[in-house]
Image (cartoon, rainbow, N blue to C red; front, side, top):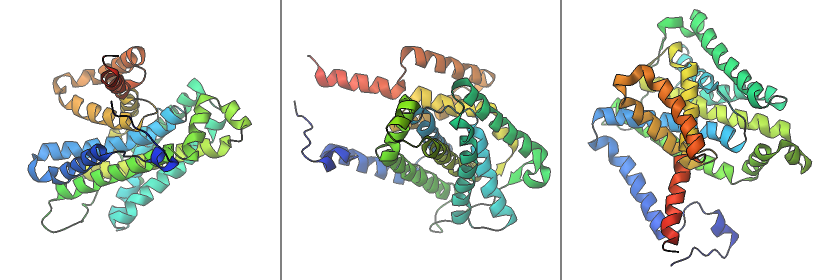
Length: 329
């Protein structure tokens, strides 16, 4: 059996190892590049939603899976990103490549502010605080009609990007998938850096982490800010996908939906966040006749996964892979 022997520290840091892995990565990127030219329109739109949800799940997993800070108000950060980009583009005429990063930055600023109470709150108290934040954002957007348009919503101008031969859906697909790929690479590198190690130390024991020199104030607020930045970027993409945003798209149910992604896909796992985003974006489309029961199904799936496989679908895949690697031993 061929073994993966590493002789240098740089080899251990490599994200892609071996010719087979590089070939699989190249095939995946080529497949993503040609997908919108051959797939039906509804599948292209589904891929856009998968990319949006994957970005949210990546950020939430950095906060919950790696840092141990549970958030049930992440729909609020997504809403802030969506409305920030929508207002900048529709009211001020700001171009999308400036409005979208601004959406991430504004959401990150709110994430930093929400992270401040996390310095003293843990467990259910932190959950309630983040839950209150998400509900507060929804109420502000619903009632502050001069800012958000209230229940009538806010139209979002269409982006212009790429060659003239691209349709609007193809343009958004490349932006969404490209953004998801880039932010996945950033998340991988972040978790393997000293920042990621500090996050994990805080998750395992914040007291022990502080004893060995981890600044809890810096890294807890940083985790919230980074996670909110991801959610803000996803919100900007989500607003562009719908071309019209309204407060009812950012409720508590959406926050539970995002949380279910990382639990079912796999906590503290970048691939797990991606798997959860794919499964929970595609699955509801197959349950249209049970739409009223979807929240109950998600809740039951979270409970079942925590009992049967705490490491999620990605953890189950690792178990299967390990079994075949060691078979018949």
